[in-house]
Length: 100
Image (spheres, rainbow, N blue to C red):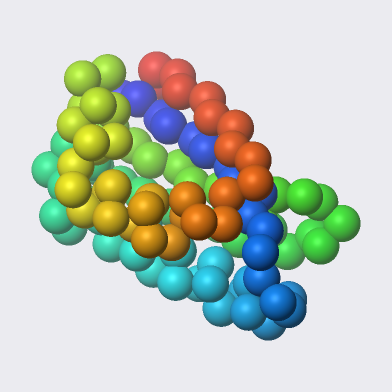
């Protein structure tokens, strides 16, 4: 199994409330992806509750093998979430992938 962990820092929100509402939309959209992307076994999204830290959320995806990362990354449903909810606000991204 491959674990794909990504953390994001977002910007461009007019208030903390707007940012929180947007993060909840991202969480819901990403956690729904295993229903439509066969290459994705599981997806969990956690929102940062420490406002002193610069990253807003992390995702942890479980995939069966290395080939699945590309299938997941380029799947139209994943690309739709990224392009509509994440990319317009992305400040920073950090990623780690490992086999377990």
